[in-house]
Length: 242
Image 1 (tube, helix red, strand yellow):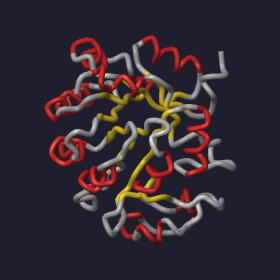
Image 2 (cartoon, rainbow, N blue to C red; image 1 turned 180 degrees about the vertical axis):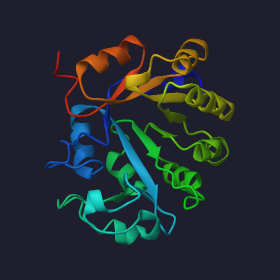
Image 3 (tube, rainbow, N blue to C red; image 1 turned 90 degrees about the vertical axis):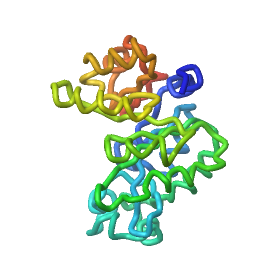
Image 4 (tube, rainbow, N blue to C red; image 1 turned 45 degrees about the vertical axis):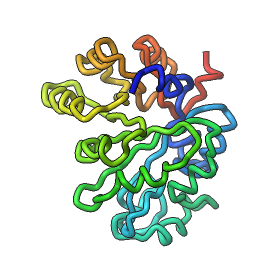
């Protein structure tokens, strides 16, 4: 996919898991966090897992404890049961991806990170593509999980797709370069490690858009912008901090 077609991806800073407040009152990946991002005109990054009944739900962890205080795994939980739980004791509940997209409704772009659970996530990419079918807004998918990235082109053709990545050692570089054979359209890289040959090659030789994670201060933001990328941020407002 041509970089100019994806210019929207790097046009505005991306709120990491929505514009939450560090899970004090407004929790990550919730409708409230998404509304706050939209109000600020920020793109939204969100995480999605696949439930026991093969439904994509906006939720970061494979374990329920941190976000809901309950025992169990998302892979063993139905979407109905997961979406009935309180996030952090607030009024927010996890949302099915299709309902989160209906909430966002194209008001800002959304970047969806697939949180793979190998052995429990067959059909994950297909389910994401189905949720995005007919969606009128700007949306992209990405993942750390190479077994999912390998499915992107076949199962989500036409959806902009990226590799989420980290590391600087030889093994990391070899693994990341191997993903270029699977038609990725952009790279999302750990901001602490963007000075590496994979990022340099994909930016300078291939012209792929770069976004970084997770940026928590202006120094890291400037490093990203100097590299020609866009930030995925949390913990501060890049529009108001000089």
